[in-house]
Image (cartoon, rainbow over all chains, first blue to last red; front, top):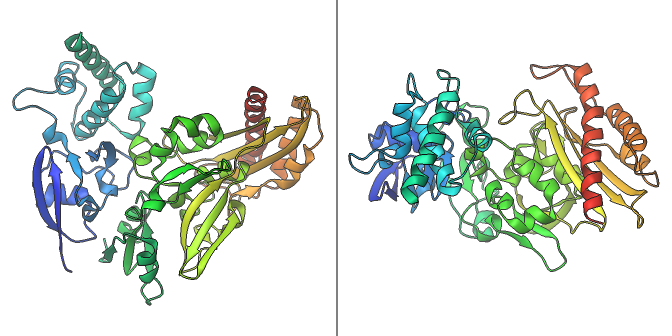
Amino acid sequence: MARTYIQTTLNGESVDFLCEPRQSLLEVLREELGLTGTKEGCNNGNCGACNVVLNGRIVNSCCVLAVETEGATLTTIEGVAQGDQLHPLQQTFLEEAALQCGICTPGFIIASRALLEREPDADEGRIRHWLAGNLCRCTGYDKIVRAVLKAEDRMQEVKA
Amino acid sequence: MQAFDYLAPRSLDEAYSHLGNGKSTLFLAGGTDVIVQLREGRKHCDQLIDLKHIPELVAHGFASDGTLEIGAAAPLAEIYENPEVASRLPGLIDAAALIGGIQIQSRASLGGNLCNASPAADSTPALIALGARLLIGSKSGTREIPVEEFFTGPGRSTLAANEILLQVRIPAQPARSGAFYLRFIPRNEMDIAVVSAGARLVLSDGGDTIESARIALGAVGPTVIAATAAADSLAGKPATDTSIQAAGELASQVATPITDMRGSIAQRRKLASVLTVRALHGALTRARENR
């Protein structure tokens, strides 16, 4: 099968790759580009473990074909920290122990970050609603929600 | 996943030129159903045609007569984030904002939800209640049909092999009307309807009488069902709970549900009545706000 040449902006850098039409974005990120921070959970759009930002919106990268991303701007979990400086969400997930096995964590960070960028005052109910597309089988969610609320406070202090 | 050709036409003419060449074709909008179906072997195609590079298929806006024209591949999030759509058509937003989670809504489209033709599709009862129509195109022209005439069975529609669903058209809503959609699911988000109901009420001048109604039920038959007799029974009735309860009973009579992992026949029949009543009350509240 012929492979298609795709050019993207990935985590702020120009990144190109070759892919087959049948390859998902998730597959190309992990297996062609070596970006294994994005996780495969259900591979059918239910669990959110593979969340990335595609042209400003969070998507399940298992439900995107890599060939669709020609010219797209993408952010994966690898693009969330600034060098050694963790994103406030990454820091508060550690502080609140908002993870156990860690498979869902990149997806939760990507999705929560998108929410706090849009709605810096999101309350607990809104956070739980927004994260309904991210499944965690370890924590029971409370610790994750606490971590997001704490990051929200911290980001507002920085702004103030 | 099986191999296929990926095509991304830039215009409708270019898209039509890829049809009728003997190759089995599927269309790609948000991909949240079709990519999973291809991966799991539930659907097959020689060529997958991505519709998102055709400008009119991803746009949405109000025509001069007040009709909301939604490109079949426009993502749900773009529709429900439009404040004008949200204020004019809250009965559409009820459905558009609860299909999947946020990640799904970034990509999923009304056109995809319709063409996937699930009897439990959330957009369908809402669109039928709003009197929406579908614009379908082929090389030889276009046709327009009411949403309720699109479906022939689970996963099946009247879309021919040489046709593309172009647009969902929601007419300007009548004065003193309100529409509402809701579903029953065991959790709050991210689930498939056990039963769902969409309704629209138009009130008379004084607001005490129902002039007309539309009701549609999801997940209680092989397709979404327009509960016409129940809706017609409301014409001329006082806008009261008694009238609405009676319509709920009538609506449940057109339900022909099955028992599956989501619910039993008896539960679904009961839910058809309960959700119809709740949808009508929601529609009534909105109609009164619009007086």
